[in-house]
Structure formats: structure tokens, C-alpha cells
Length: 186
Image (cartoon, rainbow, N blue to C red; front, side, top):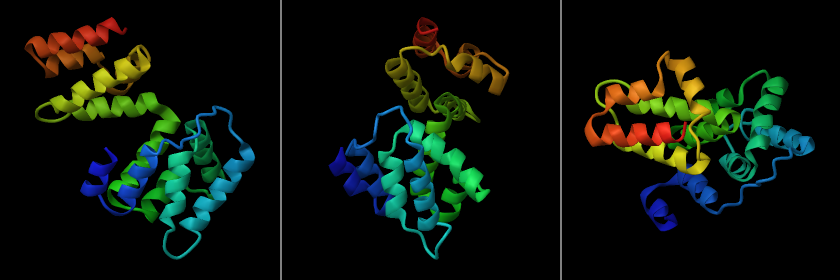
């Protein structure tokens, strides 16, 4: 996989993907507030606090820190600098690299809402992005082993049941398979 990423991507986007493949992310759910403070200052000094951006520091922090730690970085950054971490990322980075950093922070802050947004996107507009819908349903059911937590968030954001959305966007065996997976995990 790393060889494919290296050959198909470039720049900071390649570096963040390769860094994530290295599996150096801290899995400790305990947040060290002192380290959060250090990271918040490092992000500011590597981005908004200087001319140009030191992307390597962004890559290191967002690929290695635990998700609870990143969630705390987002809160602390906003309190300290009166600007969200999303605004800082978007003003200091661009393209796929920017979107990757934004996705990491979004996942850290609320993985259910991020997943619901992806589901909505896969079924939005003309035609369903079937590959995305299948990947999302299967990966969520496999990793979390329950879709329970998705249902209320999906309904609150869209005013419709997830099963109804799937039924209206798919057909045949494909529809029955997705509904079976979703209902089997409800």
C-alpha cells in the first residue's frame, strides 16, 4: 500500500498518508493537557504565527497524537487563538493535504457526525455513489459492529430514517443486502 501511495501522490499529502501508514498514533485515551498546550503553540507557530507554513509539524501532530488529544487540541486552539483549528488548517494548507487534516480533526471531534456526512454525500444529488455507500456501511458495521449510534444522528441531520434513505436510493439485491446489514446491526 505504501508503495502505491508513494507512486500515486506527492508533497505534503503523500507525507501525511505515509505517516499514518506508519501506525505511530498514540492510542492512550488519557489526554496530557501539558502536551496539548505544547502542541497548540507548535501548530500556531508552525502556521499562523509565521510567514509560510511548517507542514511537517502539522503532519507529525495530526498523524501521531491520539484522537482524544486532537479533540482537546481543537478546543484549546479555539480558546487561545480565537480561531478554530479548522480555520487555521484551511488558511495554512490546501488541497488533499488540507482535507486530510480537516478529516482527522472532524473524526477526533465527532466520528458519528463525520460518518453521517459521508453517508449523506454518498446518496446526495443525482445517482448514488454506490462504491462509497457500500464501503461506508460495511466498514462501519465491521469496525464498530453496530450502527445504533448512527441512526439518531442521521435522522436528526436529514429528517429521515437511514433505512428509508437506502431504500429510496438503491434497488434489488443490493438494496436488500444493505438494509439487512443496517437492520442486523440496529
